[in-house]
Image (cartoon, rainbow, N blue to C red; front, side):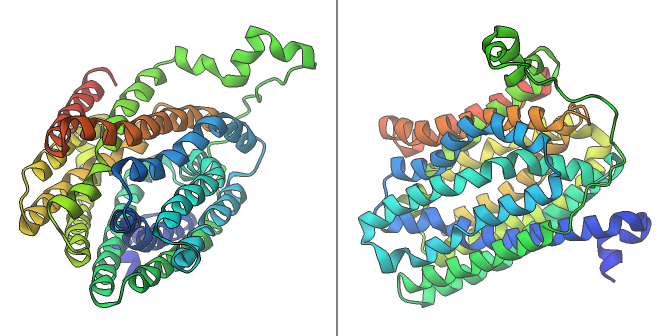
Length: 417
């Protein structure tokens, strides 16, 4: 029955173990996302965090990534990708234990600072994890099955996120503050630990190995300062390939995406006056439609390709901040969440495979490191810029602007990506 649900019967047996653990990894990650990740910014908002401080929570990881992404890529080149991903995930996810303890250790102002600091520390192991996971996915899943596996992973994420978000909202609505949040954060920590457990069993297949030699290392300290060796160290040659347009297109997408993200919890709590249960229901509806949309992802990608699926998905994501801006009550929030999930299933399920299609199989870590740098510039500038723009324009006008920018980034991917 499980094989039938995952379509495993039509897949060679040597891939079953990897695919199953990839599904279970993301399922438990959905538990983490539907609890701690989903409600951390809401919690910060409720204890008095400003839009800038919420943006700073996201920006901390981006700052660390910008400094460590290239070294992380070179570090991963020298290691077996499977064990490296497992241990970096363990070091990163153990930090989620800290969120459970915050109300016992600090007052509300101190907790906001602690969340920002803890996020910064957790970003150190998150950097190689973020750089390397797409490489592990590419080495563990043959090209012809990537859209299928990505679609099933989205389905698993949607199911567990939806159930966990509903459960978390129910808990928060009935358990005294802040104990309810501590219970929700504890659920997230269990999900994080189990996700890392399944990562341990994902193994590269070794079928795309090549005999291409590694990048030459400098012969002496004095040579490392030459422009040629600096360029080689930073892999600037990547910017002279067609992959440059993919990097720029995805940068525009992530920048427009992260401009709005710090604004949503502030708008939902302070303008729409949503309680935690309503926020849980809205995010559950979002991931219900992610689930439904993901069941059709393979068919859509087969028909129009990963590039167009990504571009049209990003175009559609422009609707979310615009519709949220016009929302006036919880029912509007539910409707927007329902529409947004369908659209996200298209963009979120295809953009990574769109990127991987343009990366040489023997040279993934540095290409993915550059993607990670562009992603984190977008996260940093967007997370800090979004609240600053909202302070100047107001929440409504800012959300409209961010929707327009999402639309333009989708056009850019379709035209130049």
